[in-house]
Image (tube, rainbow, N blue to C red; front, top):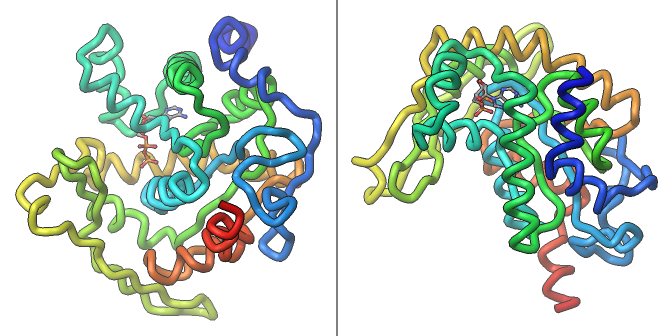
Length: 285
Ligand SMILES: Nc1ncnc2c1ncn2[C@@H]1O[C@H](COP(=O)(O)OP(=O)(O)O)[C@@H](O)[C@H]1O
């Protein structure tokens, strides 16, 4: 642990976090509470802290963290930083870490805390140099150590925990496709889970690519059934304690996705008290 903390302290993650560090801990603990990020009629900067939001998205592989984190980042004007993307960029770069990472990722295992903190630090440093502030983190933290490191260096305002029934997660991962030209993500899975034992059913239409992307779709190497099942098992073992950790700090907002994007996006905005955000933004512009 000491070594990992030293990694965080000796990297820009520490510098980045400390610059925005705040002791104020006004948080939301559930969907019925008002978002703390809409002081004074709603602005992407939290006026009290003079910085942009610092949110974390938790959730099992395939739940849609990337989709909703990326939409919110466009809405709020903060970077969406997905550690899985940082790992894939490193893999594609054929740099010194590439071989080591590919073995880990292709077995569905977690990359070491040290490597992931370093990748994240570099990303934050590059963003800071470009004038970025705030973030929506997707895929980090994934272990208690990572959460402790993050907590040491910066203040997280809100942790959104997205949830879907376990039965649909494998199908959703297997249906994922990315256009290798425009980089957009799609999903070809048709989900239709019937309600049972008092649990509501769930149906999700596929998110199909436009014709120009159709012939350029790629599937992630780690989205095979075997690897997805390993990732789900590892998530349940290592990441679920994070829910308890953030719940105990009063920062966790649980969100059961009611279906696909058309049903879920407006409900998520409502839960975050961001449903009239765009209107308010244009009114003050
Ligand atoms: N915070 C992290 N800690 C350790 N490994 C990570 C982390 N984020 C991403 N990875 C590695 O990158 C892989 C892909 O991550 P991601 O795209 O977030 O996938 P998932 O669909 O499993 O949420 C993970 O299986 C893991 O090997």
